[in-house]
Amino acid sequence: MNDPVAWPALLRAGLHELRLAPEVFWNLTPAELQVMLGKAASRQPMTRDGLDALMDAYPDQAKGTQNGG
Image 1 (tube, one colour):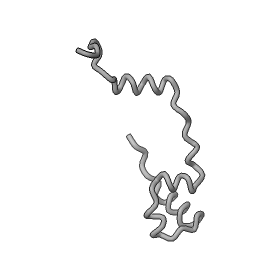
Image 2 (cartoon, rainbow, N blue to C red):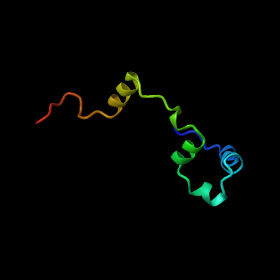
Image 3 (cartoon, rainbow, N blue to C red):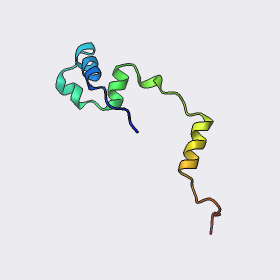
């Protein structure tokens, strides 16, 4: 489940700290806003446990089957 959007904090950051015009703020993508706020590089690389969890959740094939069928 996604975290709720902290609109007051985002508006304050965009309009006050970054001094963006409202129309510029509302036309930004979330990725662009993250870069402008210096938060784009804060995401950690995926760990082996994370990859294993994704592979379990979204397998390439059903368990017990073989390719070429």
